[in-house]
Image (cartoon, rainbow, N blue to C red; front, side, top):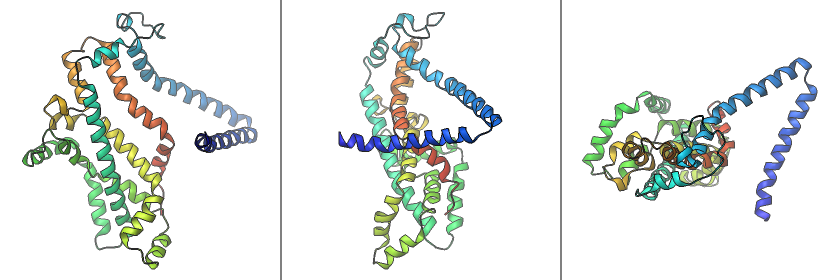
Length: 304
């Protein structure tokens, strides 16, 4: 109980501060500004409803009995709840194995990329060496290469090393990415260099400085990068489709996509159930760490 109260107290204080700021801004605003504010809130609420409606319709259709999933006129609010669509989507298919594969790949790529990107971001932002800026911008400019242009070279490389239809074949191409290095460089640049100098004066080596100073202070940036990488890997489709050949090595996205083409083409309720199941982990991650997304938008614009 104490841990719950400790965790909820900062949230309650944050909401109180936001509410107080909103009330103060309302009292201090002019009538014209209040009209603009009300219109802005109405428009934002409308677009929020429009944006969330496809998600609501997906979940509602997944929970409808199969007999009324596609009736006309549609039943906007389900009058009865059924899990038959989920049972049909899961029946006779290794969904749990696909889920495990997706979790292994997404977690491994996230862990490796966070470590590599943080180390590279520290080196590019706080270390001085010849050609630092040229190397950094050359690496970042590789983001302009279309991913589709890399599919054939990557597949040939995985085939030469015998990594096709293996976990390492799924994981290896995502171990490092220019976006992660750019994000962490921008974040580490905001950390005061005096901390690193003081640690070196105290006798700390580069590994000690990185472990005791860079990693703890970079937790917000690491959280943002981890969320982005995990969600990107969880929803990845093209590379897992190409590099896997057996049904047991499919990821969740590929497995359900192939299943939909074979068996669920006319069963829209089961298709929505599969889509809901695939979307749930990303929704959970988003709602738990949503406060970090705003930080992720502002990190790149902060100068150190």
